[in-house]
Amino acid sequence: MSALVLTGAGVSIEDVASVAREARKVEVAPDVMERLDRARKVLDQAAASGQQIYGLNTGLGANLGTSVEGDASAFQRQLLEGRSGAVGEALPVETVRATMLARAAMLSAGGSGLSPAVFVALVHALNAGVHPVMPSLGSIGAGDLVLMTAIARMLIGEGEAEYQGRRMPAAKALVMARLEHVSLAPKDGLSLINASAVSTGSGALALVDTLSAFAQQQQAGALTMEAIGANRTILDPRLQTARPAAGQEQAARELRDLLARDEASTPTTLQDPLSIRCMPSIHGALIQAIDQARQAVEIELNAAADNPLVLGDDGTVLSTGNFHTASLALAFETLGLAIAQCAAACAARFIQLTGSGRNGLPKYLSPVGGASAGFVPLQKTVVAILANIRHKANPVMLDFLPVSEGVEDHATQTPLAVSKCAGMIVLWRRLIAFELMAAAQAVDLREGLTLAPATGAIHAAVRAHVSSLKEDRPLGVDAEPLYDSLASGAWRA
Image (spheres, rainbow, N blue to C red):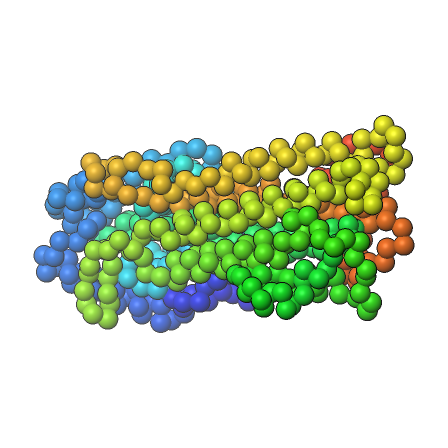
């Protein structure tokens, strides 16, 4: 895999995932170093002129009016120590790596005034696999600085780090990786932490997972349409043109491709339940939400969101609110609702497949009948999972209180919006696994059914993990290998 070259633009969510999960190496374009050097000189000149610069010669937050004199490097260390208030379970290594890359990408755009040597140290630590232990609780979305202190402290040899699968003092990890700790010049500490890199990096990973899960949902929906003998006229391109709702045409086209065959099958119904008939609309809304969230994340990845911001070309340092991520939080709240809507339709299709048999299928998808439970007990599991998803879909971005003596009186809760969305994706995949299992069983029970090439491959992929139900057995256990395949990236259909 070729290295990701940071240029200050063009970093995608897929780039973040490849660095975070596949250890893709990161390189830096020469003009980025020139940009950083120019901004650093502007910052130093502004400070030498006596200009008040937030976090360089002033305190932070409610201490804004307090002047800072004396050893500027010592103040940057003090700044980090005083804001290391995060607690809770440590973030997964892939999330930490995504965060480190996100911050490096943002810094590449220029505007921080960060010392070039500190920037290089961040990239080297990422490439060497030295990751700070980052507690997960502490950011309310007005920048992730309380969480980000873990990265800055690691670079100066403080705190704990993970290296080669072991947790150890950061200083030891740096030595083992043959890296040196850095010294902080004025504003370097603030430049490392005053950013929404946790929200942005974890958001990129969540979006990559959403795209993967959505493709699997389309496959499950198509197999259900085969199994239930659905009326496929709902996918007619003319219908999508008549009401060109967001993403609807794309969703319908993908489903048509999955169901494509030489001879069109005869539908068994005039109109199917809404969870089937409205699939293009439901899935199209998710496509739009994904696109909006991608745009929001990739804007952050490639933007100078520092406060204060160094305008290198203009020789100016200005205070900003660019660290505030209201649009990012809103995008993930919307994405969560769109996922929940898709998950609800998925659950409804499962219940249609496994219900009374009014679709011409055996009751509960049981081939033996009688007192056999078949698939119907899984309806409770499906509803329990859906309830969990719906709970996570409740918005959080308005849940904040003024802090820092009222100076910081607005927040976005972006990390929470992203993390609950990521949790929904995990649960949604479980519903997809159940729909695939039920649809495959229904296909097996429908005599004389010939599947399209694509849906035939989907059916075969399900059967590689779960055998057809011949008599009652623990289906919850059976679902685990299929879910693991969907979640791990091993699924191929």
